[in-house]
Image (cartoon, rainbow, N blue to C red; front, side, top):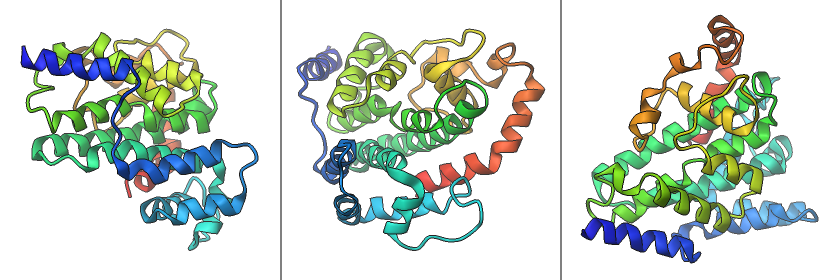
Length: 276
């Protein structure tokens, strides 16, 4: 009964827009707000990036990833990194920092391990989504990368709350379904996620692919199926769907395998940059 009361309290907070964010995300949220302004100034952007060492390091790492560094010329400054990756990918990096910070303050070793696994899953889904969007689902790759990075924001938030409420997530039946959706919707609103991305993320739990795979939600579903690290919070239904579940949704399995082989280096370098 206590767990149900705790979940009810979290859901009520979410419905009221009273989600509690760690103070460590403020710098990344300020950067997101700056980048969302169509008239944002480059110097303002650079100041925000340089104000947060982790974000600065990740920006440089992404700029040096193979997908952005075709000629092998290394980037060593934040200014050059911002110029190379562009504002859209910088916005995604800020979102990644916000999402990851939910797990950074977790004290419980088990929950912290789950948060780290969830982040590895998220990074792989983001990188795979970038590749799949351009090659299979006719979706904007940059939008797919962003959606992949923030698609488990609700999971990270629940893990951070469970650190203060032992046993909160012991029984998935307590929080999957309606509570999960309410929290996800509230987070999408709080983070000012564009409606098309928010809709794709909120509709993911329990979703299945329909042929032919098109659009953002299908991109995320395929990426989640193929991610080499599973989400520790996946439902039994979602966990049971692996690469074999993709049969019949593209031309053939051999075509999918060839696409992934061709894109392996890009996906691996991008996920490595996100995991810095």
